[in-house]
Amino acid sequence: QVVSMAAGVWRAAPAAWKTLGGGGALAPRRFFSTNPSKAELPSVALRRRLAAAVSGDRPRPPLIQGVERGALPDAADRDASGRHKFHKKHRSSPATGSPLDVAAVPVAPLSISQSFKNISYSPWRMNLLAKQLRGLTVPEAIGQGKFSAKKGGAIAKSLIEKASDVALRNHGVARESLFVDTLFVTQGPGRKRIKMMGRGRTGLSFIRSSHLHLTISAIDFEKRVGEAPNGSQRRRWQRLAEEAASAQAALQRGDGAPEPATDGRLADLDPL
Image 1 (cartoon, rainbow, N blue to C red):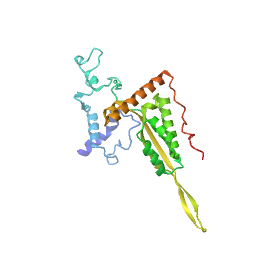
Image 2: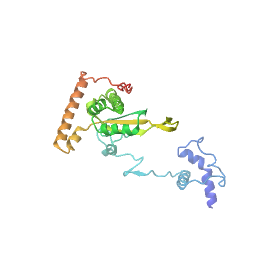
Image 3: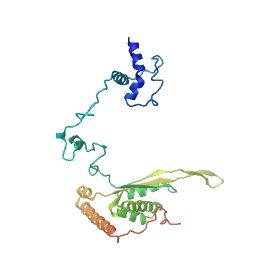
Image 4: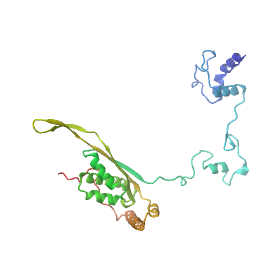
């Protein structure tokens, strides 16, 4: 008896597939074989759906948030524009399901990432500059890199200027409103060379390279002022906030264009 019932379900499976919305060309032929011994065993849920489709009793849709799918809402639950309270609660359109309240979505703060690859400079020495410039505002970091006696200072300065130019060109944000969020160094590919020594001896030297990765972000001055540990830090962030506001206002008026940067070409490096 069980085998005969299964055979009946398998014979009616193609019609059930079309009833459930599947096309005849898309139906797997091996699955809908009339011989139960040659067909693959379907899952329990699929067997229930097929049996319900054969008997003519479609399965009831599930419940979501207490509202049954396919049920028409009452007219009393609609507002003047015909919008149902269920969609108002879930902030979605009843026709398309697209979000309506775009302003309620939190906007991520401005963050720009740039990097220099394969710099012929020791990662250990470059990391000393990275620790010095990390956490400073963009104007302060540019000043520190400009007056640094190390070769990595000019490299870091050029990278920071490149990222700040991207923020100005694409987002209209002045340098005074940005700070160096992350600045770290990773080791690049090295080169092996012969090391010449005295008395006819030779050795092996390894020339290292490094990658410099930078991320600048917008400064939340209200948060910095509120979290200042002492009065001097609080006054410092208040002064920086005033400078950033004046620079942004001058930038909007068009009379505060910054000096052109190196754009990542390392033009400030000493050729010697």
